[in-house]
Amino acid sequence: MKLKTRLAVAVCKASGAMLRRLGRGGTNLPGKLALKIDKNILGELSRGVKVTVVTGTNGKTTTSRMIEQAFADAGLKYFSNKSGANLLTGIIAVFAQHCTLSGKCPYTHALIECDEAAFRKTSEFLPVECLVVNNIFRDQLDRYGEITHTLNAIREGITHVPDATLCLNADCSLTASLAEKVPNKVLWFGVNVPIYENAAHELSDAPYCIHCKTEYQYDYITYGHLGGFRCPKCGYHRHEPDVAVTKILAAGADSSDIELSICGRMHEVHVNLPGGYNIYNAAAAAAVSHVVGINEETAVSALGQFECGFGRAEQFTLGKAQARMMLVKNPAGFNQVINLIAHDKGTCKLAFLLNDRFADGTDISWIWDVDFETLAEQEARFTRILVSGVRADDMALRLKYAGFTTDRIEVIREYDALLEQVGTDETPAFLMPTYTAMFDLRGEIAKHTDVKAFYE
Image 1 (cartoon, one colour):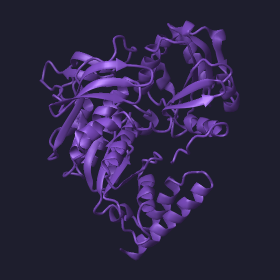
Image 2 (tube, rainbow, N blue to C red; image 1 turned 180 degrees about the horizontal axis):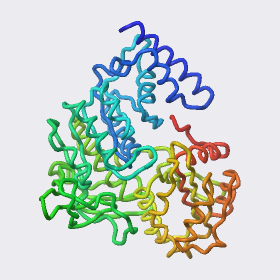
Image 3 (cartoon, one colour; image 1 turned 60 degrees about the horizontal axis):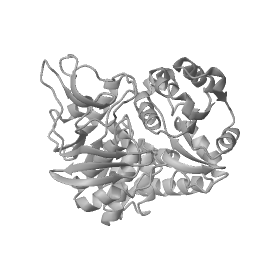
Image 4 (spheres, rainbow, N blue to C red; image 1 turned 45 degrees about the vertical axis):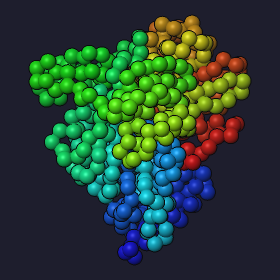
């Protein structure tokens, strides 16, 4: 190993340890320091490691946790970037953390969640065995630009990993197009049936054929632009998935039960999180397990046992109430949380936390494409409607125009006061923060309850 690589590893490890001691996780800064010393450090540290990468707009963290449970249950010697630091520098930091000072990695497998825009660069260095693309939705227009920019970034990244098996969402017309004109093997996953009886109203991010611009026709829609799409003009259509959800047996507030076909073999599967988007995540995780060589029984069992990632349907006891935190960051993801709440018949409190920092996306106009009207129609179910975050007033205005009674919308700017109000009685609560609001809120929750740090 080159001297500069060893030096970069030492600096990365030392700075990461110092930051973790300060309670900051030590994710991106150590990687930045290492990259300044050795620009090829990721390629050196990942040499000989079988790498699984999970990317796409929504579901990366949860899918990764599902896959991680399967890796652990199968006895693979692996590590992952559980902290969610999914840019190039964060991925460098996690590799350095799991290598020796000489730069040798003692693990056979790595499970890496990768930001969809960052995959273009990280793919130049990683020996990817399996690549998952969950979906492509509109997200953070100020950072990603139009949806085609995200698609093209992933497409370019795939050209760097011709030997990787691609696990692609057959129901996403954008994601499915990534299989065209590439030498990679492809394993398709998808959902063969509608998920919801009545879904939130959504604007499609991909209503027109990616090839000829004709409006798609759908045999069914699961959510957003996902489902049984076909172009009536050029014939572009959904692939029949190799890993397919064939039936929704039960969809509750805490979990789902499904029938899942894995390459023709049927399994009844318990998914240890609620929501239609997690049904897709489960199918993606099962596809990865098949590619990596994990037996199906182990893969299926893992879906019922994994721990959710931080902020992804995490549950906390706050005062007298049970609260579930649901990260929201774009219209498609927020509408899925709304679907979950709308199909839960009990009373509850709602707390919306909207920030506009860089990691959230500074353009918050996307909240006007979220179907808050569906919740407003059920307003009588909600005992408290709380709003917080840097852009709390904007969120309150959006709820007003959605149809919520204005004098019921409570703006509470301090998180400690918000949590106090959530815990005043036993009515359960849904906390819906954007990305940086989630970190701030978890920090406040950690002062009162025993929660793991985000990087654990």
